[in-house]
Length: 382
Ligand code: NDP
Ligand code: GDR
Image 1 (tube, rainbow, N blue to C red):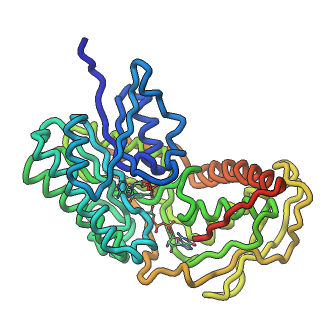
Image 2: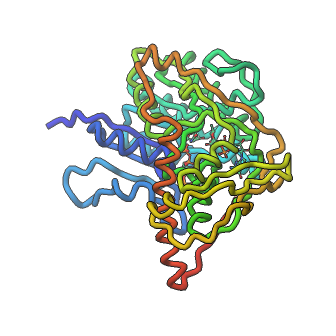
């Protein structure tokens, strides 16, 4: 009997978006293939709950070793799978780190996208395979206009954004040159409880949880003035799928239409654990100080004997987190996606913060048990 299930290939399946998208597509009845890198330790934490024993019958989730820098590997996988849809999410996605390894980022994030498009073309899958390219609001970079929409000019401000700019245009070019169904989703920042630990939101929610539990004294951050349009990853992966179901291939901005400073995100995270912060000082001397503590809230969360006091400084600035060139303000206009595709976000910022805080508090409580049991807990601040 012919299997009519749609087949999707996700690059970057072990990442934040890849894991949510895989879960979403499996629920929709897709057969999902993912590319993961070979690593010396397992890196599949985010997708372990989706794993299916390949020895069983009716398996619809498969992983393949691969890398965006290896064309032959990518071409072979696409040839074997013959996917209906490819979601190209793999990338070295950390803006600050891209200044440290610009050539690699150009290769993986920029040329990597070309490798996928070219494999589809060479394999004669141009009419069959639809391609989603994970483009980014970082393309807008230095502010030209706000809110930023599909027609706003790009001005990338990091090696990451420049590589993504190549990926954006090569996707448009293959669409126009070869009639491919290839689309860019220009996604603004989106976060979740499984966001990488070194992105600012997750760094903050982890630290606020640890500080409340007495596992960390201080949170060091860079630019507190930066403003971002933060949404929930769950809302955004749904839109990736919608983009590939549209009547024709186009490029789309996905955003919430609201922007918040890093400093205010910090306040919201600490508020969750009953700690009110006020910020004093300026520039590198700015500090986040405890203004009041809601003891009842701490108790509600099961945090007893907290040693925190009013007046304690728990947030400070470390210039090492400043970037050589910064993106000061991101604020997106998702009108096109809302009107033409009927997309609507479900999560507000406060719900996102609560979701992340709830998860991190649970994780850090486990860490506390381990620490009390004498285990060494590594604390990476990058
Ligand atoms: P993550 O950093 O969480 O995940 C990136 C994924 O790419 C991981 O699976 C990673 O593998 C994989 N990867 C990295 N380099 C390679 C490589 N050379 N070959 C194969 N796989 C590789 O990112 P997100 O899930 O947050 O983002 C998904 C995509 O969307 C990225 O392209 C990102 O640039 C883009 N984007 C993200 C936004 C956001 O706010 N989250 C906003 C706009 C765009 P491993 O697990 O082994 O590291
Ligand atoms: P961003 O996300 O660069 O927008 O890229 P990140 O969370 O790293 O930074 C957001 C803003 O916060 C400021 N900031 C800090 N950032 C980090 N990481 N650590 C700090 O200590 C810190 N202090 C202040 C940053 O300077 C910045 O202004 C994310 C990634 O997911 C990209 O892949 C994606 O393309 C864009 O979002 C849209």
